Image (cartoon, rainbow, N blue to C red; front, side):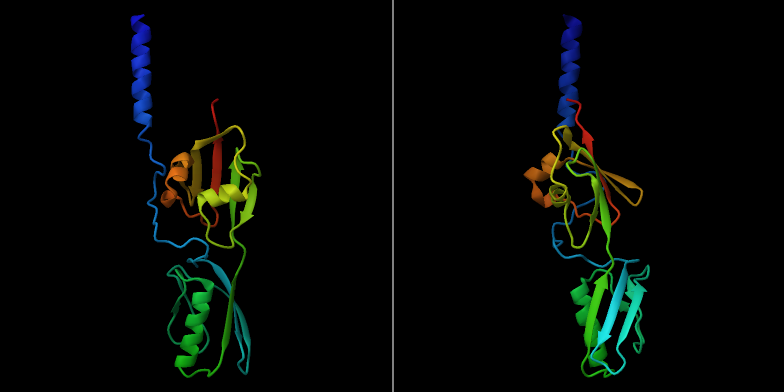
Length: 194
């Protein structure tokens, strides 16, 4: 009887310690970030079309590690990382017109497809395109939700070699804690023990 009492006490202490489990470990979540628009990042490939000028140009370039790109007739590099494609289009158009290089120019920017991966106890495990900014809960919904065996408290995101442990049940109760998904993320929903 005494052994059973000690075992139950230890089990209760272990459970109490687990109740302080954070919804997200390893990374801070910035609640000020907008969801829905993809923000350009270093090493993103982009396609730029300069239209409405005497010699229309179409270029393929990659944002450098400092987040900048170079364009014809513009002396300084342009900051691209941290901007949306439409924001970068407006900035390039402004630089060309304000600098007197062109009076009227139309700029069109496209990004190549980026993907993230869903695996484990998810209804449709596969790769998904990342065409806009989405959160973890949105990515799970896009994969048709969890299977009946999913452990919502045990989700891992592998991002550039770092493993981020996530408790989706806590995020469901506190949506401001939801994590932005990045290109190349591998999201795995673990199987529940019961």
